[in-house]
Image (cartoon, rainbow, N blue to C red; front, side):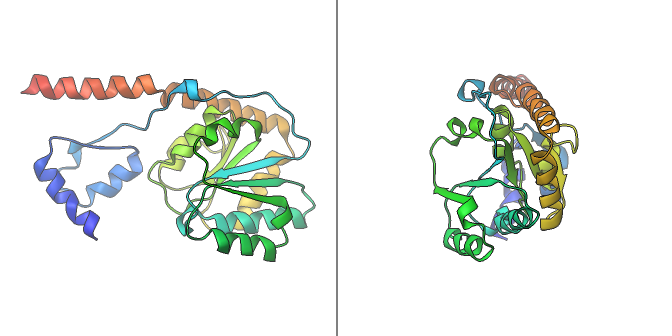
Length: 238
């Protein structure tokens, strides 16, 4: 409530408002008189930080990177992984990140009998150096303004699985460069993961498409150019 009360003040004081996704722009417009003031410029990434590595893991390696909070839906991910185990689909789940519900998630993993299949790493400064050695990036967020980690995972040449919300749905075209599932649907998430785990050809195809889109759309030079054009436009208008 406090944050949303600021949007009107920002609109009054600022020349433009920038946000990172069309979905968050739509959210903002509910609090503004002139939605045209909002401009969308997605986040940009320095491609030199990301170095995909060719590899072949005999057991599919799943990875998620996020702050461990309820909004990220990791409880749903653990339930989906428990379903994969019941189906006899082997995997290892790597959880990078820390947060207030870490102990709850570790307890849940133990109760679901997947603790031995799950590794909790805690906070990591440069996870992009670690991600290229895995196969599938998955994050079933309940809400996401953009979802920067999806672009980072794509630049690491990983297959992507996310939820059909916010900026995630703007990055992933279902079946073209990743898979989308409904929010809070552990069974659908398990199905999507199993589909990629059992079909390396599809996994590699989606990963390459995700890499190509991320490199083209989220390159740092693109963001710099867009910001430069915006500032020059404003300067010339003065």
